[in-house]
Image 1 (cartoon, protein in one colour):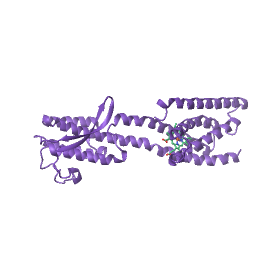
Image 2 (cartoon, protein in one colour):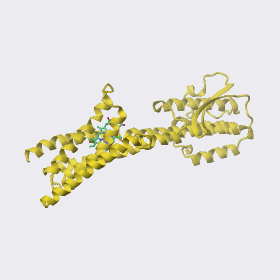
Image 3 (cartoon, helix red, strand yellow):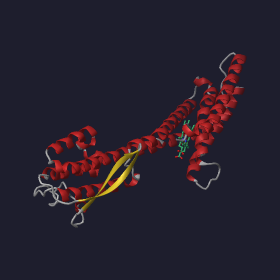
Image 4 (cartoon, protein in one colour):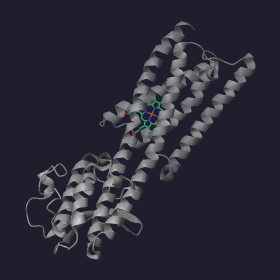
Length: 330
Ligand code: HEM
């Protein structure tokens, strides 16, 4: 958590600081308003000071971009930069509003500047909310979390392990397609390496004393369970495509309720000895569902910056045009 929680003592100083600065600016603006008898603009005394401070804050905000890329910069920790970035960015809002005559402004450039400014602020707040909430959601809802870039690889590996278990425990079916290279099973790699499978490695997740984590189990496979052809068929036709492609497979297993119905029907159609095997397959599907959720959350966590950053650069450009023009017409 970058703001709040355990960091609150540090944030409290910022909150007090920006509250005092914003209150002082508002009071000074109010006094100047009373003195002038009309809304002070950007060239009034208070309006100008607010504009200069707001502009300097925006420049400082933009510095986070090189700061994040040039790791050798030793000016303060990354966390202090983000904290200053967030709180000063919020302080810029009242300052810019006061500088911009509470938004009663004319001119296309000024209006564009304000629109972009508020979009930058809104996207920053949105990003902050995501950065605060997504890591917790990952911790709570994705105990099977893996390295994002390796999701496809790990999913493939898990599918292969699940297949080994099914292949070793279920009765062979001449029409299951698994050994015949039909469209359902296109990749020999997934069908095992040809060794006799007397064990299978299965990844699951467990909760112990409230902490969830991934566990890897090696299961001994003793014998084929009679009456399990249907499991093999269903694996090839439905479970395997889902384990490999997740949400992209369009499978009913994508939804937890669809998966619950699917596995309960499979349990009913299978002998009681196959219940642990079906449980493992269900867990493999849960794991795949978590990978999909992880990928979605990852995209949310990193996608917002693709809005915030370009808008910030545009804001910098508009500001660089605004300042000389404003000085010229002063
Ligand atoms: C004028 C106002 C602002 C400007 C010009 C600005 C600009 C930037 C820039 C250039 C970055 C670096 C992007 C990168 O390196 O990929 C950034 C990151 C960020 N901004 Fe802003 N920003 C502003 C206001 C805000 C506000 C008000 C908030 C939140 C309340 C905010 C939240 C963030 C966050 C959370 C990051 C990512 C920091 C990190 O994870 O390292 N920004 N912003």
